[in-house]
Image 1: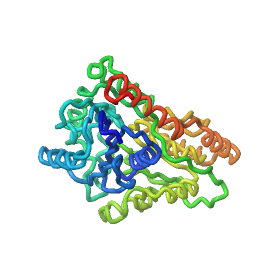
Image 2 (image 1 turned 60 degrees about the vertical axis):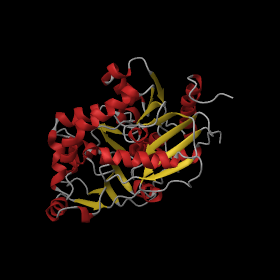
Image 3 (image 1 turned 45 degrees about the vertical axis):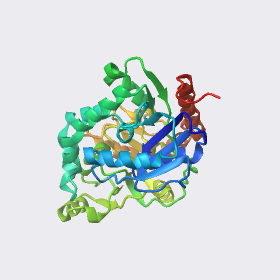
Image 4 (image 1 turned 120 degrees about the vertical axis):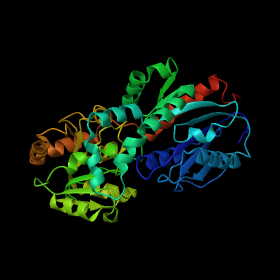
Length: 385
């Protein structure tokens, strides 16, 4: 590797969609002028001169002044063998750990935007109801902390020389909600993708009438499902193990005909569950794109997504390849019942359309990401040979 004019691509990984995005990017990209940094509690690759891993526990508060300095020291230790760093691509989760470096530029890689999320949470506080079920007050914590997050985001958006958007929806929000920050700076569209999966096997026995899988987070809209009694069909949620729930919370869920499965990031398990489900629900309040929805559609699953004016509408044509439903409406359950009892021939047609829906490939993502690197060359932030 040429140690002159290096670009660092930094990302974090949770145990959901971000893990699958990072895994795809790291295992496919081979640009010799890029050094990849992963902040995570899990390994996704073999460490070498191009791939660096720093342990980062997503459940800890990693952005106090002391914690940021500690991570900056870890970054410095990893950078001892490198020189001539010109640019860091990352977001507000990773850029603070590189902010102490001198004479570098930032490119902001947007995975999510806080203002759209804040707007939807402020419009209806019923998301706080999920805290009655578990030992972890995640909803209330988000309510108290989200404005700090917005300020952090603002700082690095302002410092950056360009932006990467993971969906058309994200670019729309960026231009609409952040116009005074971004001004006329360059915006790149780099789609999020994961590995291609095999098609939906309609002959697999359906274990789940209604199924939902996602992180246990207020953004994911679980309160829209938990407020109902599921007399139209059993609801299975894969999000947390029962040990994370309060006894009275578990009793409440069982009374509502809802059962739980612990979260799993195992690809084969998720694929199997999707194929074992009659209807898959995506209740997220705000979704920049929705990688899980993309993956379920690629398998030809029958997907019902919340009409959330963000990433769901970018992927689903209502009644064609899935369904868009206002899950906060009074007739939500009635609409689900109607979908569940559609003629099998019609459901199979929708599943077929879902499988054939356009979705970016890994090659598309890498091609778009390479456009960013080419542009950095024109800015003389990557050495041109």
